[in-house]
Length: 170
Ligand code: GNR
Ligand code: NI
Image 1 (tube, rainbow, N blue to C red):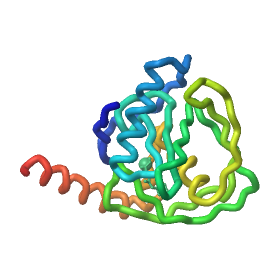
Image 2 (tube, rainbow, N blue to C red; image 1 turned 90 degrees about the vertical axis):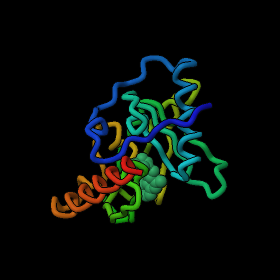
Image 3 (cartoon, protein in one colour; image 1 turned 30 degrees about the vertical axis):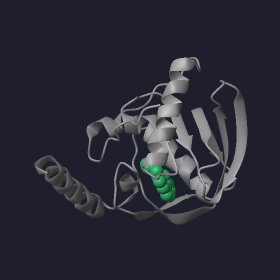
Image 4 (cartoon, rainbow, N blue to C red; image 1 turned 180 degrees about the vertical axis):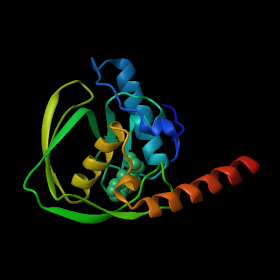
């Protein structure tokens, strides 16, 4: 396994729309394993391939407390169950140290392929439902800051640019 570099906002590559996976082969499984290692190392609960500059529809997630429930989502789609939304404070490994409340559907039905290419469906609520919507957005090139006012988004952009300058100088 290998740890991958995570792109950070406002990197334009995060705006790429990912392409569907045609066949779940060993190459895709290696990507999944590398993404899981990267996600656990960064202490995130989800990671989309877009974030590691691979523009394929692949997501990994684990919302358990002890990293015991890895979930693999290939070519995921979801439909809301009901139209109720709830705001929850979100973070993103591509926007470190920034958090904001984002309204998301309370409950969703997820359809995806697993690491063997087998289709499954899953009904999700709470944090898992939020995470599914957040990761799906990444595959579409959408970030949580896009739901904020342009004032707040620009403030975060400036702080991130400053961080990147400092990291270069160090
Ligand atoms: O680690 C993460 N935490 C999180 C918290 C609330 C809603 C969504 C997330 S996903 C995020 C990891 C990440 O950036 N995934 O793309
Ligand atoms: Ni994210």
